[in-house]
Image (cartoon, rainbow, N blue to C red):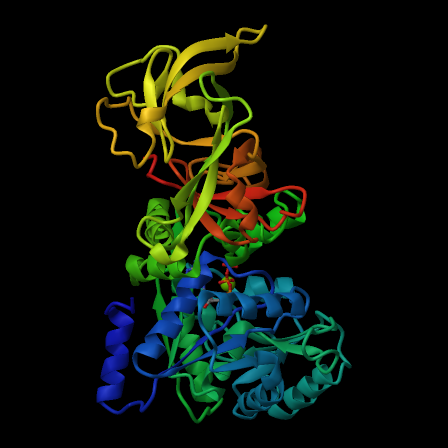
Amino acid sequence: MSIQSNFIKSIMETDLETKKHSEIITRFPPEPNGFLHIGHARAIITNFELANSFGGKTNLRFDDTNPSKEDDIFVQNIISDIRWLGYEPDGIYYASDYFEEMYERACILIKKGLAYVDESSPEDIKNMRGSTGTKGVESPYRNRSIDENMTLFQAMKDGKKEEGSCVLRAKIDMSSPNMNMRDPVIYRISFDHHHHRGNDWVIYPMYDFAHPIEDAIEGITHSLCSLEFEDHRPLYDWVVRETEMPKVPRQIEFGRLTIENTVMSKRYLRQLVEENKVVGWDDPRMPTLKGLRRRGYTPEAIRRFILESGLSKINSTIDSSMLDAALRDDLNLKAPRLMAVKDPLKVIITNYPENQVEMLEVELHPDIESLGTRSIPFSRELYIEREDFEIEKPNKKYKRLYLGGEVRLFHAYFITCTKVIYKKDGSIDYLEATYDIETKSGSGFDARKPNGTIHFVEATQAVPVTFNVFGPMVLDEEEGDIISRFKEDSWQTYQGYAEPYITSLNIEDKCQFKRLGFYTIDKETNNHEIFINEIVTLKSSK
Ligand code: ATP
Ligand code: MG
């Protein structure tokens, strides 16, 4: 599946046809201050797929201009996540490697009378900028001489000025209706250690100044970003022009991806991690790529979901069932079919010989012969799903077991429930049933129609497993801050059993448990315990 036509692709086509560009070069520019989430996947896939469709290039560039929040751990995980999604950047760059050039470019602005050192307090600067309805007020430092500005900027760079004591501002227009053009701050002082540049620098460029220069240095032709940067575009163009960058990139905005009931902001995700609401950035409920991966989502399904949801100029909220559908489509093609019970109810087959276990040879996937077969045991003691039994058949549509009723067990025999054994508290302890040897799967028996087909796990060789089942961490309709909205019950566990073949699967392997859904082996699994994550159920519950 490749990228559909969209408004950005059309622009690129025109730019190649008119020879404005001979090659398409895009970039994905994350700030290494957190882990990537599925919203970033839209930006990654869009950038790589658009460039690929024209034989172009895509850079990964860390927009690392804010030392206090960034860390190399995020850098490394971003790289591995992009590779996991299936993309290899043409180059991996760091904005902080361009600090020397950015400094020179800032000096060009000063020398043109287009930047000045402002010693007003941050609060005064904020107040002087005014608001959308009112004009801004010019700073008393706005008309310093070029020489004075050069000297002060040099002093900032040399660490002779205190943090917060002054900033460099672009001199643009304090009465512009676009707040971004009201003399934006372009450099600030910070003595924090930088994960990539160490203590080389004590002045750091602001995003709006740094980003266009980074793009221009790399010869990015189309700088794609999400919609919230639309109002920054005039400043982007101003910086490229006034700093006299030889190459001119073009910023184009696209709508952000939002999925219903899904937190899609690094800031909130970070809060959930820091306040221990989740077990980490890779908690299977997290929409981070690490979380989705642990949950069992595949890169193929994520790519398909992003490509199918298209690219629009406006922000859109997408129904999560679309992602589920992409997962089912992908997993259906590759996941072996196994049997497991999530909520076990024991059944004793009273007419089956004691101490006998027969092995049934069953294919792993109905459409992929090359996956081969495995043996599943059958004996006098089995587990079925508690919800597959009712004392009385409740209605005609009910196609499961009931007292006196007969069902087919997948790959095995028909059984008829003959007795219900209760515990002291009145709940069901176990069932007794009889099987009919004539009805063995594959024998062609068709004299009676059973009341449905259910799955089972043979009891003596059943492997105990813990099922992890996940729901949304927050619901869109609930109000309040992220911590108070967090649903503590969004991770449910069940103690169940799986057929013996489960022990041959490794962490991250996927399978389908018949009638239940698609599952993967969680990373907590070890030689003593197996943890299984529900990826998605078989049918949409909506
Ligand atoms: P967040 O808002 O979650 O903190 P961010 O935008 O601050 O994310 P960056 O590291 O700056 O995170 O993002 C890198 C790129 O990913 C940016 O170009 C941004 O536009 C894009 N991006 C982030 N979130 C989304 C989203 N939900 N949909 C589409 N693109 C996104
Ligand atoms: Mg951002």
